[in-house]
Image 1 (cartoon, rainbow, N blue to C red):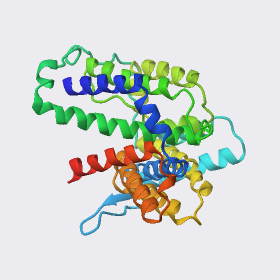
Image 2: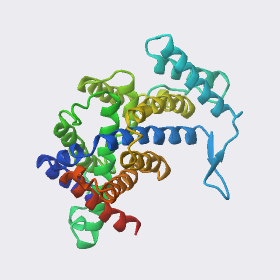
Image 3: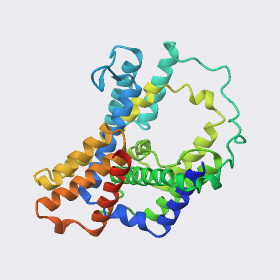
Image 4: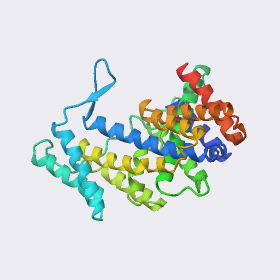
Length: 331
């Protein structure tokens, strides 16, 4: 927890100095769109796994699961219901589909109605302010702090880019009010460490709210209040099956992938790094690793094709940082 705390402090410093903002805004437009699409692919992969449609296998990484099992069938039904509801402009399409699938789960005996719908949230006492700050400052811990820092930095960058691209919030290649978003993110990491959690960061599932029309901070505040209230209704929240949310996430993943249509596929110096980024995010199971491979390939391709003048200083700095991270983490 001490390492998480100091990584959060480091985040706040680079956010106040606008270093993170400068780096994110320096990302080329083509890579921003590929990151958004790659996150869509990542969401789809997660949803298919959680529904049991894709499973692990001996000899190959994944294979098709039992498609006629209850969970995969309900996931597919949820997805098709959402598509139909959206087509016919039914208000609250996603929530309505999740509710229908949850009720079906109870009717078919897959989910049980809890004896009580209300419960007190667990105590924070065992983890509150349990940070070992002194030990975290030992030289041996520095690598852990920087590991938290780099992963959170690029995971957050990818999530912000993906969500804002889907919401149409990017203006002239830049994200408005980015500094405020980054400060909220870094501040949450520090507060989370004090409460006893690992790195508190933005989640790619946030795209579901944006896809449904959320655009302002009011949506985030309302969502946060509802999450707080949900801690007192955890038995009720537990009635929502994984396959119901998997169907909704699949739908959101479809919406996230529209950005690939805005990429110039006739320019190989743009298309190749874009494809690498788009494929690497879900296949490495990491937004940070996908961005790393995309940035490094983008820089190399532009240099080899004598188009290095298109590289701004931010891209070069990011490529160098990400190359160092790649060697350090995966070398």
